[in-house]
Length: 108
Image (cartoon, rainbow, N blue to C red; front, side, top):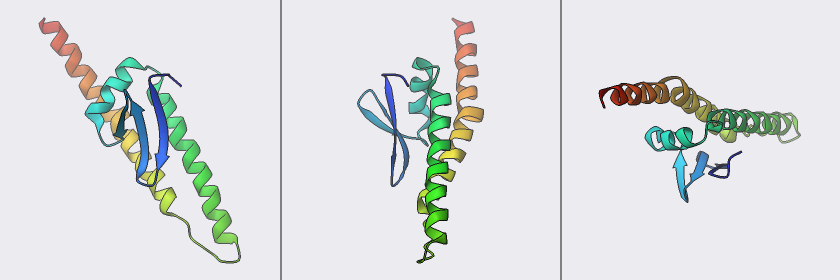
């Protein structure tokens, strides 16, 4: 992972610390700089989300199968939302931005 950013989880979702600022995954425009400066960012983010989902899913199943039958699914929903936001960022928003930037450079 780069020294330029840090990934962490919160009760509201996966967050990115970049240049002493906290960025939520739905703040696509703010994430473009992170991606531009850190080619490994999308790969790291995807891995972070997948690991978090696995960890929280295992805990939810363990809790559900326990004597109290708790369905601890709130944290799983956070990661499902993070997967959706990642998909939009990686497959739609960032490619659209990168293409527009390339086109603008041709005009210079």
